[in-house]
Length: 424
Picture (cartoon, rainbow, N blue to C red):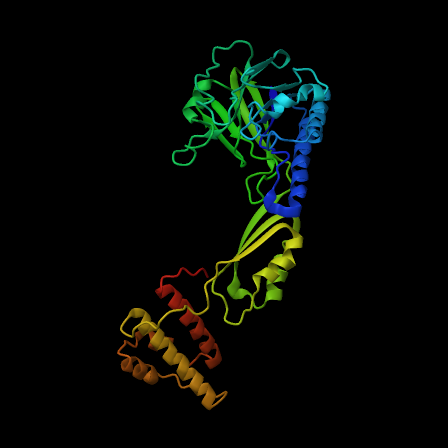
């Protein structure tokens, strides 16, 4: 049995210029997630710790940041856990590579078989004590000249039983990843003969199988962009030999603190700005990136200032955003002609509303006359059918309730007949 901890896309040292003064907070969260991943590897007593590219956000990092990483790798080595790293597309192995500028193995005070960086000049490493070989397919340019898996077939390699691959790039998806810097196909994965392919580059976790080969993207252990909702975990991978059949088990493990949540809130049920703030404040969480979208019909009497709402709630979240996608209470535009469906509908409903308002004004509290006569006269005068208005009249309904219902019917009906989608 072989046990791995697979991570990638840690992006240590990311600048996060869109976060302003909170950028430093997220940078520390990213390092905390990396340290938590190391802790997890030690608790789980894994054999190998794999970093499938973009450990660093760029090749320009202060020495202190590199020393912090080396110290964590040293902890793994002292716990008898071997680390294998490949450069990615951010910490690419070019002439200015951070892996050329700093010797992580020496900085971690470990031997070369305890902390190994695979490069175009060291494409693989064998661990006899683990009966394992790790293949890394890396280029010295950000854009690869070919697929990193082109020609890789390890089936005949007898140096070890377990065969692990590491690649940083995009799985080919026609029309979506064609222009990516490094691209490979499922057919190429299947042809490798690997037991497991540890992938990096996608920040959301993805698992798959191509032929007999299990592969996975671990995703970023802590979101690199604060709205990423598939990040925050690493993968604990177990490879087992069951009567000569290699079985791979992949178990996600959460290490990140940041969460992303989206909420669609029907504004038709909100009666004031303080109420809206109170409702949203119930989600308060310093680890939460909270995106709120107001939907539904915007009430006539609701007065909202979204900038004030944002200022009130922003301190309660890691990041807060609110936008208004609701529908105005009364659609703007010219009155529809009376010989159209919309015009007929509006005319009939408005006639009934006017009748109820007039009756209420003439005799407050008195019963409202609700025969079809006035509706019929209004409809005939407008040259329209009376079917809709006759159905609305009901002598058993309280006039005030009927008036409120009719106003809502008018708003909903106008939106729908004018082609607007309304979510109830």
